[in-house]
Amino acid sequence: MKVVLVSTSASKLKDHDTGLWIEEMAAPYYLFKGAGYDIIIASPLGGAIPIDKGSMGEGFFTDDAKKFMVSVLCV
Image (tube, rainbow, N blue to C red):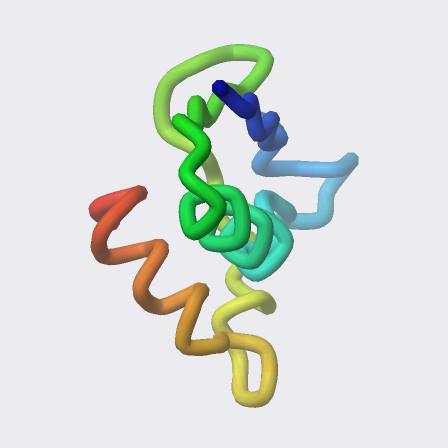
């Protein structure tokens, strides 16, 4: 079975920097992967997914988020 996880393509909201809150993609990614699903990551515009820098701050940047950035997003 396949699961599609859809991310934002937006890096700005008006004049505010934004992007993917990485834990919101990492947590379900590893849950589905652990359950044996094939996972497709998509975004409306394709290409690189912008990351909200706040999601990498103290208390937010979880082990799953760190692993996801290195092994899935390759950032």
